[in-house]
Image (cartoon, rainbow, N blue to C red; front, side):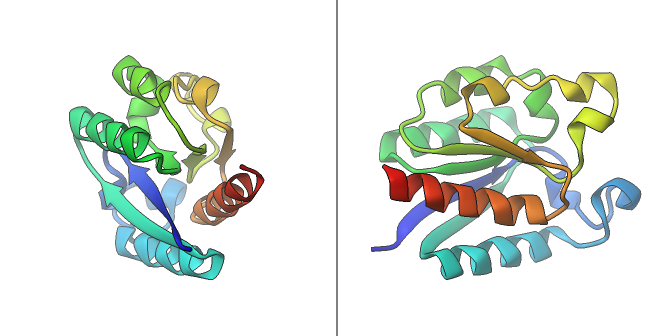
Length: 147
């Protein structure tokens, strides 16, 4: 049986390839979607990749994940650092949650070192470019096997 997983991305991640290539690389958001979908297929996961510029939409998707008991790989973008609404929604999770970041947030500006997601996630993978998503999907698959 294939297990559905949401890969949720917050503000500005749809601009990958154009946004600060020195930090985020030159690969595009479409490249990221293709990588997540192919990795999911290899792992027997049905990966649904989404991106939004809006906090409320991201919270709504988290509610969907909670209600449907769907695992989540989450890169909340800048919302990672201050969205208490997102954190409150994530506290209701009913399946694995892995926080992911393309850049090493601990090595960047001070405000990026704080995450309201980390305390409610099973784990965090950061600083490995798009490979962070691959590792996060492997982590979700492993967590699902243990459940």
